Image (cartoon, rainbow, N blue to C red; front, side, top):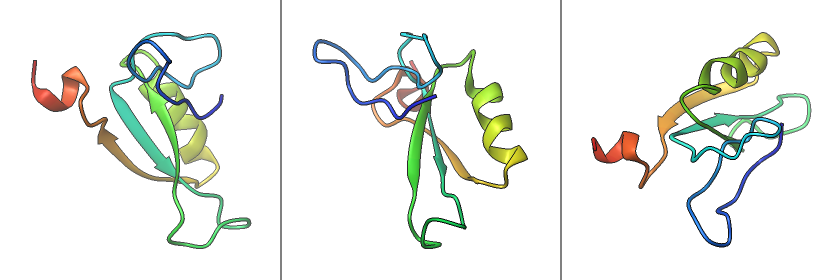
Length: 78
């Protein structure tokens, strides 16, 4: 799992390994052993991987927020 950035020729993609599906969700997290409480790292998730990525972060007590990704179909209601 990695942080994703917009593909050079398209929308941001899911952070799940091997997934190239456009992201719909931003999972904001931090590792309290390494990061200040205010700091947030972001993993992007498609509908299929939102649960598994969220579960991975929740199990480690890293997940802080889940928000619709600005500009995604999810956030625009399309």
